[in-house]
Image 1 (cartoon, rainbow, N blue to C red):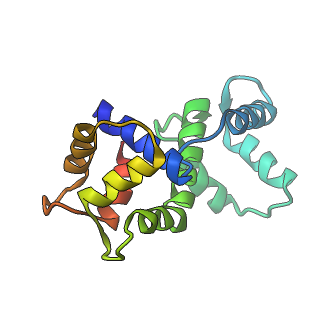
Image 2: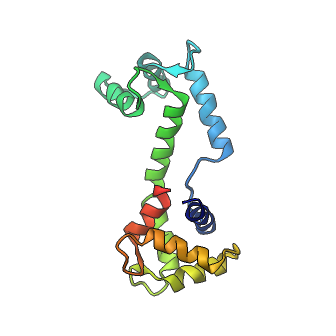
Image 3: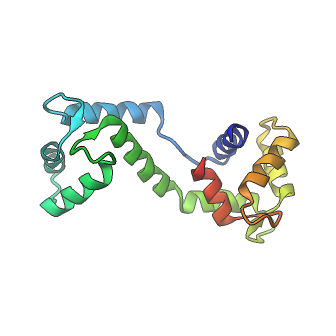
Length: 165
């Protein structure tokens, strides 16, 4: 939900978890996309991706390039448009930040080391962050994240909450 999503972004910001590209990074990616869209049709074709890999001195087999292309070309039209390109980069970013950084953030909240985050621990973390979130919104977030309804959030529920919204 909107409230839960808003809280997640505030929590992630407080904990230093990077869930999206910065404006600068997005501009860099847009410039990259434009640079390698050599025929300027707003799409990247397999040949343009081959040139990109070659420019980085990456020796990529045809099969590797095709597999990469197939993963990114989600609408299966034979090209990669900018939205597909950015979605792919955001997935890579999420994968990058879904391991150690998220675990570190979870452990910051899980002060007693129980492997689960209680309502009290989240409330205290939010209070420390001084984000001014009403306690009923915190409870809404916890209820949304607590998939097995045991009153606590384990690491997998925490990670799902951050990347599922």
